[in-house]
Length: 435
Image (cartoon, helix red, strand yellow):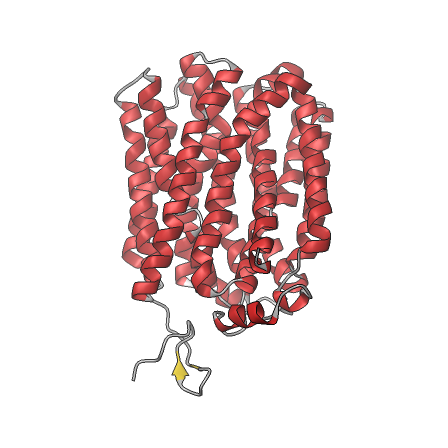
């Protein structure tokens, strides 16, 4: 295996542990209610607490990753979130669960800013769409796909407390693998061949061969129109994603009377659709870019996918009480949503190639903001109305808003002139400049 893809494989393992850890609480929700006496609204707030910690540290972790490098930040973050996971059974009640979820979110926040930076340092531009689709789409949906059956079986064999302890050990195991193998850039890795190093450097943008930057230009980040659009769109998709991640097991159990093992089995379909959608998105974004060399093409693909995701949810409001229809609609919504899975990170790198960690952290913070709002809104709706209809309507409306913004307002960025390999003028993405 090429060194760059070994590095990506290590990051994929990180993402799988990340998402199984953060989703575990949704399968232990009934046990937590029995143990600590929490209500559906309490559960929504506890779920939101994770994203509060995640959002705050997503903004901070981007500059930290750019300053200190991905490796150091990721290993530190993994120890933090493994500890929070292991301590969950000892939370003691509502406030303890909130505190531990805040810590878990803080520890997991560096994952995607660091993964985005690693992709920009280890991969040439033409390979990033597929790689980031694997990291931000396939690994995320795939971890939730396998997470349901794994977590429900762990609960069956070890109890809900044992499930959290096993997950903490999985995080420590990742550190054991990553510590000797993971490097911030190929420049730091003695195991990279000269041939592969030349190939990587030939496909990088100006300034992407560094391991870290000394400072963050927040003015450039906050003035970046395309980055704000990425944030809005990611928030729109994030509302649907977080709502289903935390409430899908409860929805299937409450609406259709399924057992916990049946919930684990039926929750496979939406995340399987997410894997397919993420793979399709990664292929499409690379192929379209190779043909058009248009940064705006990323936004068009995301906008169309969001529109289809929102529309897919609406039939649930018409055909009620039918498990097959509900699963088809939710699976279609999640599948179309995950078409965007890796494109957010590609678009963030495109928007700020010199500060990929910070740009990714900004986008991830917008995604985390949806994670704060969605679980609490769903909990409030279920408590007050006894149905999930209001939540489904909110998903569809937000997807429509995000889609229109991306389709109508994204702009093609200006490309700096840089010297080509033979002294000819070239645009920043390596294409010949117009003359």
